[in-house]
Length: 151
Image 1 (cartoon, rainbow, N blue to C red):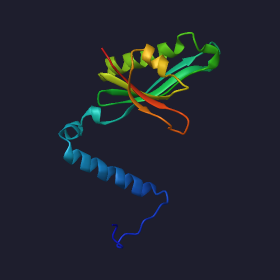
Image 2: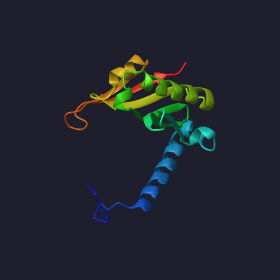
Image 3: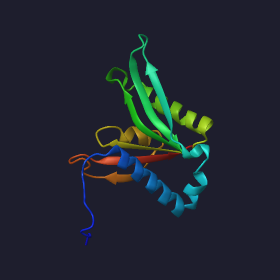
């Protein structure tokens, strides 16, 4: 039972959000020797990793947006213009990001989330394994989380 001493509020509050994040980070650091060892190292920070494909006119043909953290690359977005799908461009974008993450940032693994109508088969063909399936997220769609170990 929640005590009557508390007032619950639901508005968006950026300063409380930052305070909550900082306090959660402090708690996690205190409880995890692995996270504690990361503090103050280059691996602690998320670093953006972007790869862009431009056509002959400089227009965006495709791109990958992600970030690296610790030893992981997290692919947030991978998109290829419809005119260029099936040409291998998506595979090239992903391979470039994986090479950069491995060679320049010492990443050993990659993760990505995708929906059933997007690209789970594409990622499987690139050597990714499904590690999580969330049906009906959002309703009527299945979300997949896939990972890959970088050699």
